[in-house]
Image 1 (cartoon, rainbow, N blue to C red):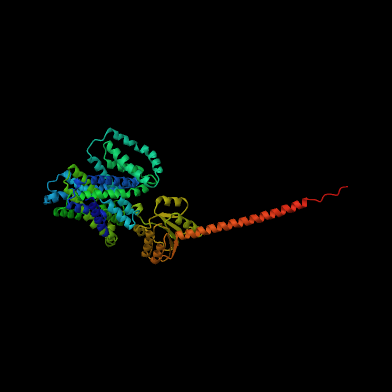
Image 2: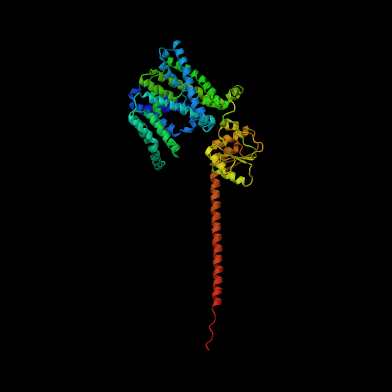
Length: 559
């Protein structure tokens, strides 16, 4: 039956992906289908072990990407904390009321069980949010960073719950884990030596599953907490992002097993589907709470709305919390099925709303702007750019070179845009006029001040999709000047020309031509030097011969 498990899981994942939804919904469905064929979770112990590995690697990957400084911003730590408390205060009485009204799954539940269910429903999906942000190219946008920060805070809340749920008192040896930061230099040296291939993957698995999960479990702590902390410990290394990418498919593959185990707990009844539908109907109130809280932290209503809709769903972490509670006997196993169905339905609802959130903002903008508090958040104010004649989007090596070349001719009339703050600081220290902003983010263009004297825009961003997006935004703003762009591939050049770009610079072709020009120039210069040297040597030889001839005198006749 093992081949059938793989085939059914693949088919369900592909089917769901075809309609634009995360494959995890398909994996949940595959679990239900397999249950119909008589496969149960208890009959597949290996599947449960793989599911546990998936959760552990998920937390390790979150730690690798964690920027602790971003969590210290009020809109992130306070926003997520207040939303958690608000969700508990909202869901507990609503669930209690539904139980009084006769919903059988809620009848007779105590306050602790209602708090557990409310806690599980308070989370938003990291998987869905990241996919939506990547598809829109908004990972570096302010609303994207706020949403990701809140999701990480929610993940930390979940890990704390998982740790507390272990129930056992940690060993006294757990105090030794406080020495881990002092081992950081040694760990980083090993990190430097493992290279970039399979050794890097093996290093990541050892750090997550041995130094993290096994070591923490050995001293009486939750293994998932160990994976998260070790990930945070490695986050400051230059190769942490590469490591996260190298273990990405391991994590995703093992998480497939986790979603399968949820479906293998049993098929949803009509009562389960009905309750899940009621829970999904409450999601808009979850969105409204996020919207209100984020505007309290002086974010623009547009930023708050985009982030809120990105967080407007239920979470796979809610499933993890429910799975632990069911395993401990705190909740009935049927709640896993109810939350799984609610999760799937919330994704079905969230996908079209996230695709059309900008239209919703335009429609309700007069009402939404009334929620704003002034002065606005420093990162959410209008981007003032002055009156440049030349605008360079992307201040990497190419953009920097273009800036310096233009500066020789048009000093004081050039502006660079760069989304990495460290690069912005570097360029400013070098005397370049650069402001922080992400041209691949629609929010950037919404906040950009108009530049009536702008004559030329240089698209020096490394990604073709970002350049195309920038062209569309410039056209939307009725820009009438010239646009030039760099590309890596010929087909990209054609697409940019068709979109309205005036001139395209093929990076590799130009580099090849420049290389040949450089080589030919050097060869010509070398030949010229050799010719001049030969001439010089020839003249020197002639001069030496003349001098020698003059110095030779005829011998005098003997007397």
